[in-house]
Amino acid sequence: MKSTRSSSTRDRPHAGGSRFDRLVERAWDAYDRADLRSMRATLAQLRGLDRDAPEIASLEWRCALASGDPHGAAACVEAGLAVHDAEPDLLYGRGYLALERGDVGEARSALEAAVAADPTFADAWYELALACEESGDEAGMRRAFGEVWDLDGEESEPLRIPRERFDALVEEALDLLPDEVRSAMPNVAVIVEERPERWIVDDAPWDPRLLGLFSGPDYARERSSGHMGAPATIHLFQRNIERECATEDEMVEQIRVTALHEVGHWLGLDEDDLAERGLD
Image (cartoon, rainbow, N blue to C red):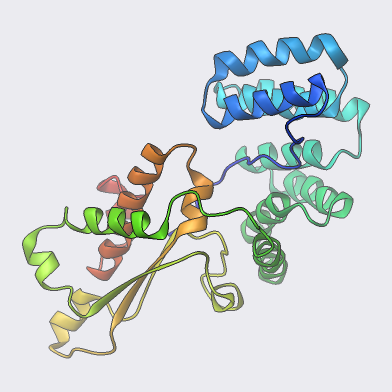
């Protein structure tokens, strides 16, 4: 299952710093909650303190994008780069937005500059991998995804919800399946892991930020052949799902969609079939 692409936050100030730092943190918190009204109000206060700070430019382009204004987001990025031409987050913003509009060449150039300026910038590496994929550069894609896997593995933040609660949400999602599907699933292992193992990066599907993955024979093929092969496995990756969701309500919905998406693959449905069912 393809990960949803997102502009995540990074290098936030610690609470208890200067007033400027506290306002930056407040703006990011508003962004995470999709509270754009509060974010704009906080940005107005920040501009009164230091209009040219790169942190403000980073927040402004995300605020514009979240408001449905990609052209405004691009203008914020370029205005910020006019003052801070080597700021990694603004280079990342230029690359992210270029990839969104299909300008793969510009995206690669900007994202390569971002990771050169900050080799620990996992989100920039991730977008660079997608740009390499779009341009047919499999070696570049795999290298960039490998960097993401390594950097994501250094995360020390605790899981946002206990594993027991996550497992219960997965079970609730599977309980939504029709009885005839549930009764056919004893040979399917559903495994929750914190993050993908390295083999996913070294071999297809490569993406270290997958939300879920189905591996093994699908039910449609086994039923048509009359032969039950090796057990099928559905993997769900908790940290990746948590990264995509701002609230627990969003997480509940994403777990449902991801679990049912992978069950759909087991049933033999392709990505277009799943999209038609609202499970993309």
